[in-house]
Image 1: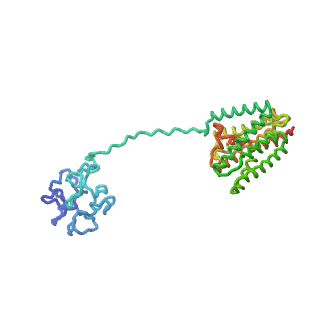
Image 2: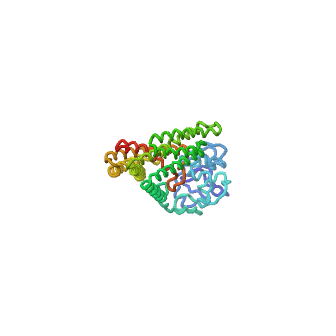
Image 3: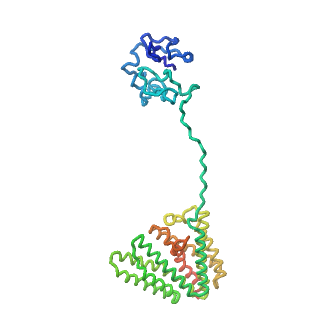
Length: 424
């Protein structure tokens, strides 16, 4: 639509002015003036008859969206009477501004001419069409393809090299002491118990301000292991009772605040670490004691290894996410499978009078007790807000991080072996 429909040709001295006149429009006539050119005349359509009325551009507004200085033509927020446009009948993007560098024209404030329109400004170049040439186009950033992120590999979360090296070293020490001199192996167990008690009581004091007395626990714990080896279950129970009593008396030397809390933690530590460890010493007293202890160690290690290997490779369903997010049901299946196979082999070839089906049951029980022991240790560490109980063993954490599945498994293996093949 040509903007000549908005008035008559410009008067003298008003180039580009297309306001209405009293004479009214002349249909089909080509207006004269500096703002008129031949190509535009070819596109001029018949102008509608405008009825007599007040000249547009005056002080009053009507429903046709008249343009005036400072009116809707110069306000971007007014969208006018035409859909997608403005009050003056122009596209919304042209409304309220004179041509700038983006359109190839001049810059500046709105024109001082009262009825000047952007479409008939002599410097105006439409946005679309063959004549549009941007003067200062903004440089487009180079669209370089982003490299696809490399797939992440599963991580074991620990230094496997150090873990394997430490595990092999501990295994050599244990096996050598187990089959050379039984008393040396009992000493190794006692040392492990004392170190485990030190780690546990240290973490309790650091994280919960619980002061479980270490001296009576360490002395009573070592004595408990020796008593279990020398006097069996009766000696272990007596040593446990004496250790608990020593904890109660030792704590009396300090102020009474927190007494019940501290002695409760001390009795728990005495039962959790040294008392459960005495069942390993009691296994050693049998004629085939070293093989029973070796079976116990092998089944526990195989169960942990099967859980780790299968869970790391195939684990998708969490076993106990609130306690240990890394454990999966697939890992538990791996632990049971590996332990049952190893149990059948051990009972058949290592234990006197043992059979393979007894080994299957023993392996199943070991997988269950080892998993529960691991979850119990994880529960303690989660309550304390720590990842490992210590840093003594590179790749493993502390001693207690290796005893977590061994301690609760020891009484299970001792009891089942006594039931299957006797205590002899």
